[in-house]
Structure formats: C-alpha cells, structure tokens
Length: 70
Image 1 (cartoon, rainbow, N blue to C red):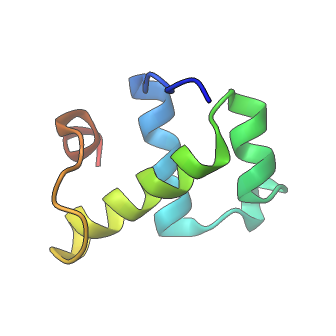
Image 2: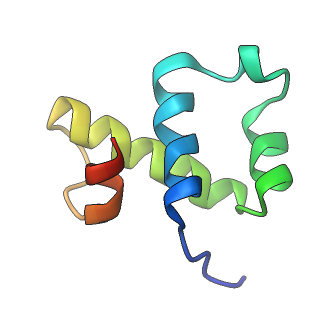
C-alpha cells in the first residue's frame, strides 16, 4: 500500500470527523476516505491522532501539521 501524503485539506477532514462524525456528510468514513483518495486506515489513524491531541492520551507521534490544523 502506498503511503498517503497528507495535505492541509486532508488534515481538515480528520478533525471534522472527530468533532462532528460523518452523518452530516451523508457518507461513512470509508466513503469519505475513498472520495478524497485517502486510505481508510490512514484516515482512522489521523482521527486517532486528533483524539490524542485533544485529550492528551494515546499516540504521541502525530504530525505537526495535524496539530496546527486542529
């Protein structure tokens, strides 16, 4: 599987899903990832990174871009 290079646009998607879920988007996480060209596992990990940034618990090795965007 090819490593996804996260753009700032991509990094806006993860906090949105973390904060609001996907129901207002009219699609689940898998479809969001597919529609944006983001592997689902990468999107789920990025959402976990947002949770770690927000709560201070969990993965500590998140991208600085993600922290800045959040």
